[in-house]
Image (tube, rainbow, N blue to C red):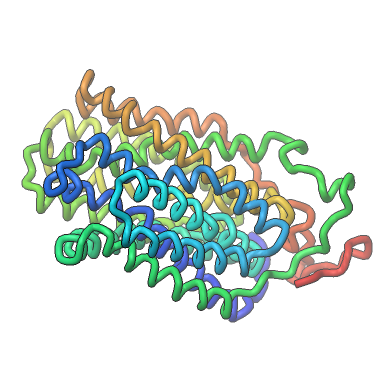
Length: 420
């Protein structure tokens, strides 16, 4: 195991701001999905059109993730996060007087694209301010932001929209993101990193040219997204339509899986610090994911209610446990000059894979039923396991790569001075 390096006290405050910032962005991105019943039942909007509107913020994120990462690489994290949140608030407020569905959809695309600033940049804050021996835990905490944002949206959006109109949740998201923009501008500081490398030197070269490590992690994460979104998208309808559950207890099981998944990310991240291994634990998560999905398929086939509920929570928890591990591994391997772009590519691949899960898994369920679908979905972690590297990579410009036996970074006489 690696020796311990002290974590700067302010790093935890910046982590809290990063979690809150991304949760606020997730609140906005998730809000349209919880407006579908109102759009459909009260406004007569076809489900296909309502679904397209709900997907608009995610489409915006896919279009801008790499761009935000590039800007964070070049200009630092503080103003990218704060500026992106402020821009998110502007687009969110602009939806309030909007009447037409087309205009609303365009604004949601723009708001989602602006909110993506926190995805890549807040990950860079964790990598920059936390030593290697604490990054897994810190990134696991950071990865809680998505389920927290989804949970807040599920609790707040439907009643608020019913009482104040369908644009009220976007106004709320605008207020929250604007407040957090100010807090992040005041509380986040760019972490120390080497001075910008000279173009044409090895330090400036793309880490993707060095080896296939980053590409393999991107592909692994895209494959492991399949069980995660298959369960989150179809878990509720499976329990209600196929298992005969009432909607309320089925909803409790699905909600429990979200909270368990958030806690699981922290536990797995902390364990990766203790074991001093990201990809080794990632391999274990992939193997466990296959086992859990196959057991869930058996429980679904046997119609064993109690076992099915327990295995659904377990499988859902395992299905999201890889996110922090892969995210940390990508940032450490990419280094301080490429981590923003690499994290943007990482998220883009996951969102693209997730967008294919709905129609493909839905069609598979229609043809072969839930039990066999769960078993087939469980084969994607097998493919991920075959692709997962066996050893971690840490970029040479990462301070962790030059740690002395006592845990103090060794000075590198050939390195440029650090800047903030």
